[in-house]
Amino acid sequence: QVQVVESGGGLVQAGGSLRLSCVASEPMFSFNVMGWYRQAPGKERELVATLTPGGSTNYADSVKGRFTISRASAKTAYLQMNSLKPEDTAVYYCNGRRGGANYWGQGTQVTVSS
Image (cartoon, rainbow, N blue to C red):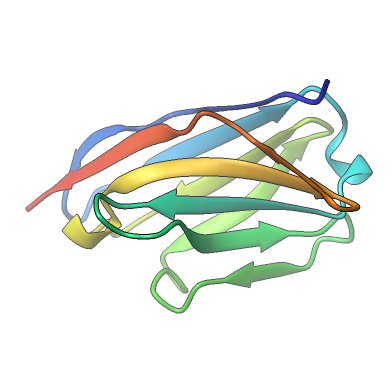
């Protein structure tokens, strides 16, 4: 069974940085796309950034220029988050998509104080 585990969340002041890690039980290139999503209290889960095996990236408008998704190794992806804002506060989830299946981690909490 495919497993995806996130880490790196925490509490940070506005303007600060965090780096989230996503470790999958299978190589990233085996997925059609890897992505980071987030869900704030009372809101729906939303896309943050995606990365394909070929290296193509896509970002939500709200994080462009501040967040960077990258592949650190065969089974690890990062989400570097800079210039954090209070509105970035959410649970962040890593997702691997392959065919019709989606594999989710349990999430990591990011809290940005003003």
